[in-house]
Amino acid sequence: MNAVSTTSDQAAEPAMPDWEAQTPAAIIAFILQRFHDPLRRDLPVLVTTARAVEAAVKEGPLCPAGLANHLEKILVEVESHLDKEEKILFPLILAGRGGSAFMPIKVMMAEHDDHLANLARTRVLTHGFAVPADASQVWRTLYLDLQRFDADLNQHIQLENNVLFTRVMSGQGDR
Ligand SMILES: [Fe+2]
Ligand SMILES: [Fe+2]
Image 1 (cartoon, rainbow, N blue to C red):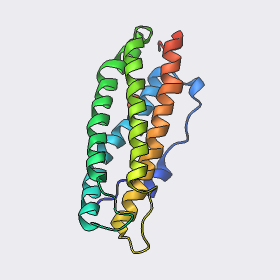
Image 2 (tube, helix red, strand yellow):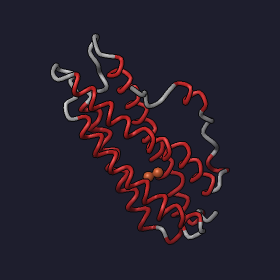
Image 3 (cartoon, rainbow, N blue to C red):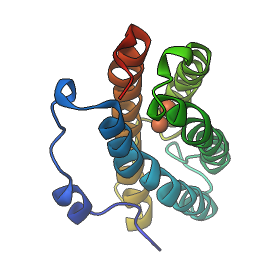
């Protein structure tokens, strides 16, 4: 069973840059490499692993009933969202037309709210990522990976909403 993330990934991560000093193109390049690529790589593994855990853990107060289907819904919604950013919004910003991207940005921010609600639901379905003392290593690793996914998606949304989109909408977004 593949673990989604490793500590060596974490150790290799660069520190967050000073965003004020970065161009929108540099911020977008960072988002793609640090957040979009790992989501596409890791979300299918999370779904498969959650399905295996649910099949193995059928009862008990900490049983994560419904988790795999919920993660599959997240996978579909997040992949669609990443496609819209990469095919519509980011090219507009990179072309220096971010000032006309008000509507696509509003749509992306509304979808970010949906993603945050989905993360809250994940915390409910996993009982706050709690496992029983006799939980399998696969189950424990799944929850560690889900906590990392939660933290990364929060950071990703914060960077888009509060740095990139804010800059573009204030008219400072063109290159
Ligand atoms: Fe994104
Ligand atoms: Fe986004």
